[in-house]
Length: 250
Image (cartoon, rainbow, N blue to C red; front, side, top):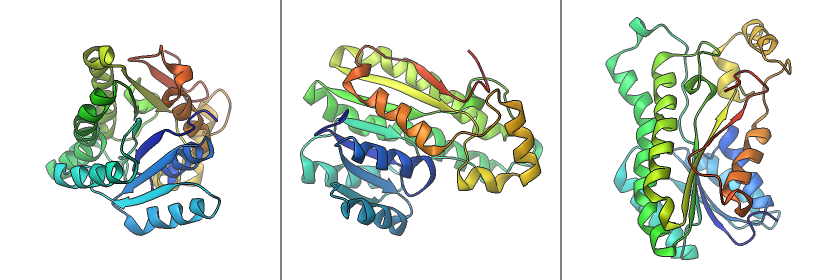
């Protein structure tokens, strides 16, 4: 098992890619803290996994607020005494709209959930990982942060490009402490949120632009996260792993 005995925190864990990451980490032997604003959603996921013998802690946490993050991370330390891996997955967008239709409040909310949350959670976990002299942080970026592959919305694209830049800089900053920082940039993935954002015909057209002629599956993104979180990726630092079926080739 790639994560045997590791303690992993996953944000945005109630559904979609986040839930798939929790499931994959638990399967690989990790103790997993599943964090989400949707406390009922993460508890349902955790309960199902516990039924299969996994050690999963569900926490209702708003990862755009430092006090909530501190409370959540303290609960993880109280239970397991360490944090080996942080997966910054929280974020997303609900509606595709033109830039002139985006309110300032919506811009701020998307930046907070997709980019500021990555900063706040990383800031909170770094002292723990530095004490351990070990840590893995994996940030969820997006194909739209790499290139203009598919139309989404400008605030989401800007936030995900910011995640990639933050990943590179933090990797430079903390690599000497035994901590690696990497990102996964999924292509268009068949999550409930993504499928709701477009009509079935629009989704079909997006799939046709991808060389493998289909959308990604959440479990495929989760496998890439598990790899970067594992000791097999110990010499990978500051990288962004594209998991997009060839939607963008960098």
